[in-house]
Length: 254
Length: 254
DNA sequence: ATCTGTAAATGTAAGTAATCGAAATATAAA
DNA sequence: TTTATATTTCGATTACTTACATTTACAGAT
Image 1 (cartoon, rainbow over the protein chains, first blue to last red):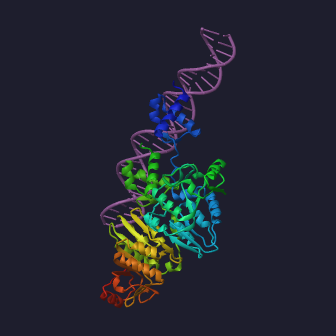
Image 2 (cartoon, protein in one colour):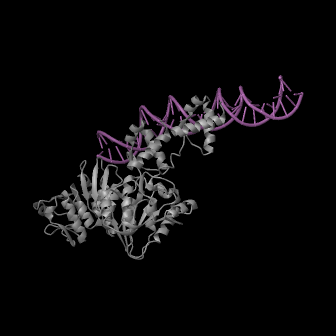
Image 3 (spheres, rainbow over the protein chains, first blue to last red):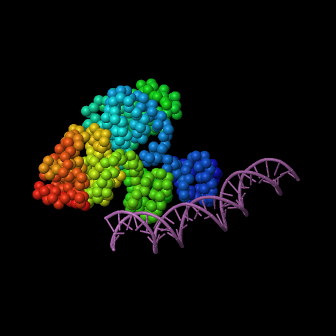
């Protein structure tokens, strides 16, 4: 019957189906006044079960999902700095490394203070410019079409050129790490290029803060066993670390 | 569906895909007035989710500030700006152009405000980042070893890749123009790459302020008759212009 | 069984705020 | 200049909040 909990169930059910509900709509369907619906939505919002907006409510926070690069960079900035610092310590004298693209590896590039000769191959223009400041570092820029959002190259030119190199380490940033599905990123072309990078390097080191775990992006880069090492922050659970360890992936938490 | 939050989501989604959105475009797609779209963009800008620009908005990351501001750039800055503006007017709809490297062509890149589709191939990372802001422009970055002083690539990778393109125009910056000896630059490798660019373009346009005339750099790029047009400032003497004219080079003084 | 008080649930009404577009004005680009 | 884009102002519409009234359910008293 016309019960409060009953209404809440209906509202949440509808929300699951459509991702969005409207106050007007619900009035009619549930045969109650708009004020009541608003009170319901307020309660459900307080419980964190939905997000209120003018005229209705939605299941997901519309603003937290797809933040642009600048904003993305501000998020978990401290974690990324620590991850970058830790990764920078892995660089050895006369290394030749590949650096992919993304905000995490840019933080890494900023942490590199080479004291010996270092060769870097990168797809990211920002990483290239950052490392070009160091006199001991030779930077090789990969070619290709520039992505608007990330200022890094993609495409077959880069993939072909990568075949001519063999580097000691690849430092890779990803959008999602799923022990079952592997590593993913938002764009398919970026994923393809990243996979070519893996093949051009003897060791693959993934840099990813804890928010990336359990997520899946659109484009699959590789299976998890193709990764040698993951550097992340302390918020990653022991359970995940154990699963990854069993698959032969070393996880470093900083 | 006519909801504010929905619109914001759509706008952000589109931004993520294309890196740029236009007010006009969004009006039609979302079936609201331009005023409303502007209000939306204003709100999203305040949230730090995008950057507003005339006629639209972009994700434009302000890394452009990190350009190497060496003394080279400061000198003859006004002349270079005027030369750049004049050169920008030569761009036609659906052009595919090559932009070399140097401070003069960077000034040129900043003057480009494309209204039609434009494809740009460049060796300079700064030019690439600058043009990456424009939604209508497809930027192709050439590969190679990064030069410390100019943040542009050199080397055989770029030379080989250039063989795969045929562009309508090349915009070239040089260090010296000598009617008898030809065009020169400081580095031999840069000269070689520049010559490959000339071969990949149907028309070669040299951008050079008056101080470059009569000088010779170390590396020879080409003979003077390989140049179709030179854009320079008014301080170049009539005598030189006449000599160049006889060799089939059109000189534009701005 | 029938009152009666209390609290929760819901509705009504009145005032407040948000949304949005039209027109006028201002500003920037060509 | 002309043209395109921005901003401002205003009014209409819709949604929201608040305060208070009504209903309902139920416990305890009569």
